Amino acid sequence: MSILEIKNLSKVYGKGDMAVKALDNVSFSVEKGEFIVIIGPSGSGKSTLLHLLGGVDRPTSGSVFVDHTDIYQLNETKLAIFRRRQIGLIYQFYNLIPILSVEENITLPMLLDQHKVEKKQLDSIVARLGLENRLSHLPNQLSGGQQQRVSIGRALISNPALMLADEPTGNLDSKNSSEIMELLKLFNKTYNQTLIVISHDERIAAQADRVISIEDGRIAKDEVIRS
Image (cartoon, rainbow, N blue to C red; front, side, top):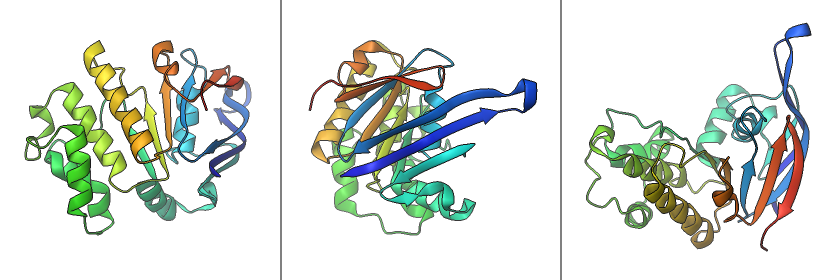
């Protein structure tokens, strides 16, 4: 069953002679529980694609269906709510709230929705992330690897339809990079969590179920690595 469908997606920045086509008529679908890595050189359009999949930016044309919802038919308020509930975003530079504790950062999507945080779920995620002894710490009291673990927890807490990661290891050393990827794969397999990672690292791509290569805003290759 497809959890994500992208149909004829394009994004153009600027107008006239200054127009730049960042994404050009891209279409593909993603099954629930897949682990996909999207690779491509700098400027290829892969980060633009991720932002469109995550509802962070709006396309010039085309559609994105997340769990059968056409997200760009939603108004800004409804899109923000849908994004918070159904799309978990992980960024290279963590995007944590500096004045909130680890626990508050992880549970922020639930708190914004005024939903009760299930302690059992929180405890399970925190334990798998190895953050049991860091819940009261602020982000500036954590290492880079620990901060990225917090951002993973925040992305997972709402049990979203999609987890999207934009160069999640780009700001980490090799040891922490390996640990973060192992965690992402663990959640993908344990919770059947659909995972899409943007990366330029071929070693990360080699770990995926499927690799989509982007060049000049188009899909150059869509290859199943393992089923």
